Image 1 (cartoon, rainbow, N blue to C red):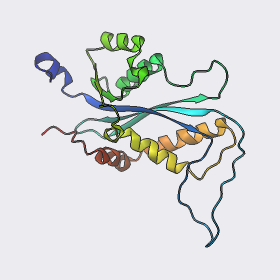
Image 2: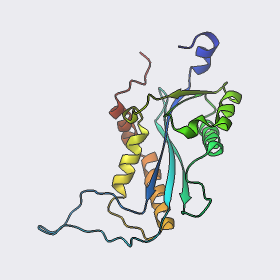
Image 3: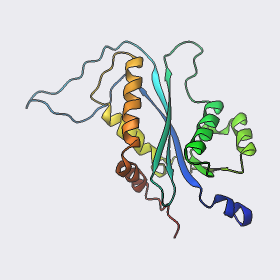
Length: 201
């Protein structure tokens, strides 16, 4: 519960749901067409390594269109290469999101991943508390985060593709995410799936 000046500060804020995921070269399973009696097969090389790392935000504000903001990184499996987003990347993502959303305050809702507790990120919160509020989801509650719908939709759309290299997969991931950014009804559907009421009574 927030009161007084803090309540006024949060008026007009965007509620921003954030989550991370990864996609490797192994395609997922999905329905497709084939001739009767013939099981469709997608051939993969079995070679190569790496993952496309993704951080996504679904941004909601009464009276505004739902927005999807994302960042990707390509992990190629090289020695010493970072395998996920770190505090600096999260800070840059939050700053960029605020700029894209017109400079309004952000109420960021995310899970309890260890990276979200990094000391550098905590210091970033404290420096920017005039526009940034962090809300943590309960443990083991992915069904409350609409960004999970983004990842499920993305992985289904990639299921029947078999890129040979991680550098072939990365542009496919970005293309699918850009398409989702333009699909307002699908983004709203991801929110509806959570059962959360995001509009004030």
